[in-house]
Image (cartoon, rainbow, N blue to C red; front, side, top):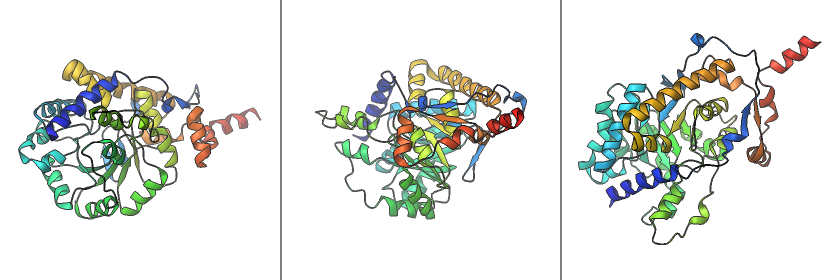
Length: 360
């Protein structure tokens, strides 16, 4: 049953990518263009550091799948793409491995194909410390992702309905697993209040994984006999909303959920993310064109991220947090409702003050 569910998730997630479109709240984030801000491209580095974790690039292949023969082949190909481009990669939820060790190869193939890359194992918030350690050991993982998915579980016919123990269990895993722990949503976002709780639990990094990408409420609803939960299609906060909500929390964050292009990656970095994760679009690219297509896409994205950083005058991904940003539209309304001051973002580079001083 688990293998069938994993195959269903892949099929439905890929189908969703073909229907995504229209306005996204990343479109409410724009850079103030300073025509003399550019630097030499040779001075730009894509390397990023956050929460004691170092990545060679600020982009990763985020958690997707595993647990069936078909998904094992997908994981193999994703790992090859990660190896050839240098991007970090995460496994999908390893719950299938805990239920049936015979599917271990559908996950461990990622380490075999990518022996020196940065790999994150992925477990749910009900996993015991012992299971979390097993996942890390199987993958020889550099970090552990714990995913939060209350809305997905709620819509899933066979889903969990007991969530009270998740917080204490996360604390136990953080204390006992021996590698950095990254807590991530699955597509509904992490609020400021949640981030503060995670920080106090000792979580190293949070992946906000906001609304606008793969929608697991819709996926699980499509698996039901009747579409009982279609009213949840718009549930949650977008990635840029979560990143703005995270200002001042003092917990490193990653951006994922609805990232469509290199500009969205750079927007996420400018909003304070240490890196960005992509799942659905990379999956659809792989299924449509194989490893060569995914390699080409990731390589192009990395080149274009570097090009945008050059034009913006950012020598490192962290330097993007000094670029001037305008927050408009629905995202601006969210910030107003949450008491988030966006005006300072528009002049944080100091360029405006320097120009006024020069005129005087």
